Image 1: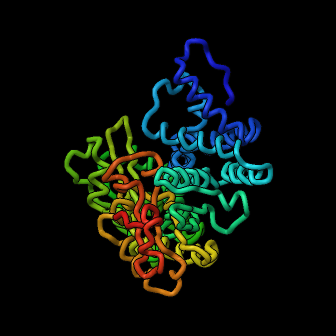
Image 2: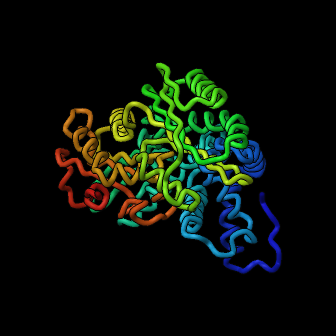
Length: 405
């Protein structure tokens, strides 16, 4: 992981790689090697769960690749963003006293354990960098002073507390994406056998009224689908799920744009999977819907309330910055375009639970990795000012609390 550099590597690439290796060194070579080995075991070939693991841990994998200058002689926008924040982490570690530095390393190591990721740490680093660029003096109060909030912002005599919080979109899904991937992996062996015996193009629509709430429910749905295929029926219904198998009639089904066509057809809340038989040119699409819409906006608001109550002291105006993790591109765009998230947050501002909040912000991986609109929010985040807060009009705080929609 900590690689010797070949002599032919350009100077700029070597400098970038050295920065990445500096970040990896904060964790330690042994910890990083162990993490990469663990991720390699999770990334099973031809597995939906394996691909999901690679996506979930993309930040760690990217940092590992950046540490090798031969791999990335020219940085992409996402790589440049990540490398800049990695440098911020190294600079921060160098300036912190011993105990706060140990707390920073502990957070880093926590992100390299189990299903955790480095996203919470990089969200904190990004937030600090953005506030500094807005002219604030930024103090890492959580690390340095063990304050309940993460950052203390000061500008023109005004002070604010900022708490960062990472929220999984899975909490707002009635059919969690992880369960869907496990379901598809479980079905695929039977499906490949069936598709080889029944060449063609198919669409299996699944309506799961109550979603999937447990591994047992997921296994039951898998058995129901396998039974449908084995019996060569076209539909099946149970209390848990309604299945209907139809011909796939989408025009241009072999085109690379099939996933987008399916997303347009079934909407942002649907779970989709496309399986093909390369030898026979067959395609099998699975599309699943829960009986209720996802509740991502409500999930964000619930975490805003919890953070306002537990992460802010109330002595200074408070800001909570939510990082919405594991949100799909279409979901994130829908939350913004429909104003669903803005409406939910502004309704929350009218409740007593929001009294400590001068503003609430929300961002995702699309902003962290430097994507542009419409995939990412215009200003790098969504932010809503609480007009009812006494500090809503404080001039020194406007750069941190003014609304971005």
